[in-house]
Length: 247
Image (cartoon, rainbow, N blue to C red; front, side, top):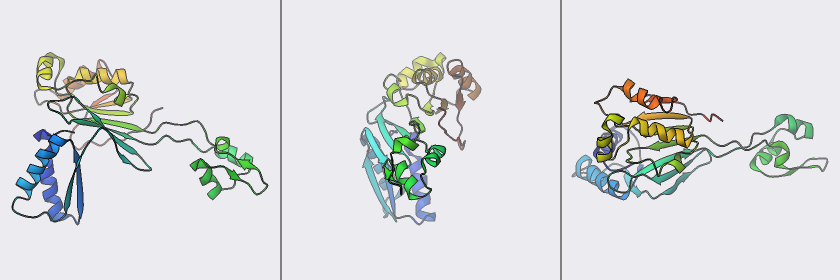
């Protein structure tokens, strides 16, 4: 997300472990320009100082927009306002789909097999009796894909709304409580209430708070956010969550 040390130092241990224990040939690291400068110094000035890495390390500069487009999901980067430039958040989104209506297909005489696969792809088919079946005949209304938004550190939420809109899960920092809002503004962070207000305004389904200051108890952070947005969790290291499309 950005180049501050608490967000990149883990790369040192990860790459060191990969060198010793994993048969790997190529690693790509994507980050903003300023983050890549620090990452480059960390990797080649500390981890592999005086030696050559056993695999290729490729540093790729992030720009706002699509990063990855696979059949199962898309990944997009968007700019985030934090201390310094070249900070990013990420949207993970499954493609929209139209469910196949089995009963309708049966009524129309569409056999199981490649014909149905073609219809799902959006192609019309012709049956053995000469009848033409169009995708609209057997596909239901479009269902949006599951959407997960991840924001690292952020100083404001004004520019995040369009990217977080209707996310099934929003993972975002909540370093401070409202009682320390001046500190949050000074250091470019959010309060739990600000994160919750963004979740409410963006109409997200679930909110996951991270990057909590050790000065607070997790239950106090949770309570402040829940006053605004009840479907909230204070995430902990090694927690696992399944994100599903709610509607």
